[in-house]
Length: 365
Image 1: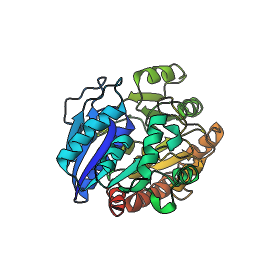
Image 2: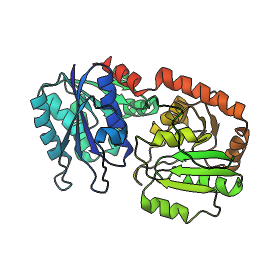
Image 3: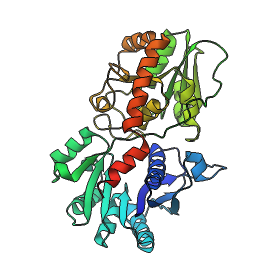
């Protein structure tokens, strides 16, 4: 099958959505599909000296078409330009996260499937208009969402049935578990966090933990320069290291090097300071943690319990620092870490690889 994956992501960039679409394009191809990814030109604030495939750590098994994005013109124009590319490619199916381009594709006769990562009511009035037109069109096949919680929101707010919506939690690649970096020459427990440093990600919790647990090394991987500088100004001890942004192809080596991985999401979680995703999110971080076969301590949020439980992680009250301390203390024992990490890894391999995710979606075509 010839598939066009249409995204709003800039390639390359520091955004998680770019990782997501690159991994999914690879996964569609891994499942035997002839795949073309349409994206925006890369972020001007990031430059790389390798190919996009190498930067994201994906196979060169799909094509990438990059289109210009002019903010003043907006998403409608980008979608029209995308449509011309789609028509030239003559795909069997159009899939993706660019709502308006998906709708235009359905108008000209292509079967389409749209992947939503947030409720439609969070979109602007133009995108809400196009969403309602899309789901009513005869060529619209399915809405793919990232969590059961998000599915329920769409069922409550839109004219959709359970059969119209398919839940596909996010995923990760299978990685080489022996590939690590040299973090420290000491024998201290190494505790890590990987991801952005936006509001609601719990970086303040990690800093408090580093102040309390002086005999443990803490590591934060990711973040923009301004965010890193802010959080560094809050640090009191020298047992926490901010590694900054790391190329997606290299991040797994950091994860592999930690003994424990933290996901201290708070009751309100933003993306670049916008909106609150805590009720319906499906964080890439969780699946990537599982793929590195490490013990996970996570905030006990209802949406995360769609993936995590007491068998594959320790779940604690998000803002109770003492509970985080107790959880880390429990995992000082290597055997306790091993039990959780093994269970998480088995769950990941059986349900949450990108290839499994893509195959489950392909079954809906």
